[in-house]
Image (cartoon, rainbow, N blue to C red):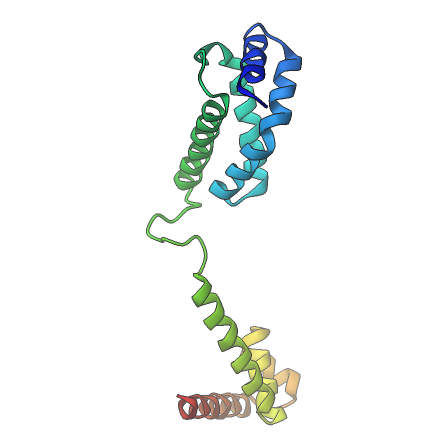
Length: 177
């Protein structure tokens, strides 16, 4: 959209034209949404911010200065709305300010994946009776008593197998490093 057409729509919007608001929405909403998605990393929240942004556009259309870029103006509104959402999330304890990354870094994710694959391969290499007790303990969160019931053995046997399985895995891991 060229600057002259944009200015004409802004003037219509300032006179209360719903059609002008619709055209401006068609022109700018996808860009505003993409921006908000990158800022918030939450689609539902970004969509809410876009809606709030266009409500503010309608409410404050009279404050657009003549020859001001509508795109800059609307993105400033979207930014303010997004930052307000971030502040709300921070106040509700949904954001930890001490962390730089929202999630683990890509390197940490890769290391975690490799570690999980290594543990699974090592687990697969254990004898059945050792693998079984570790799976029930770690993956199913069962107590020693519950594991003894499932395996038909005693609690002391379960404890012994878990100890031996862990020790064998630690020794194998030390051999890799």
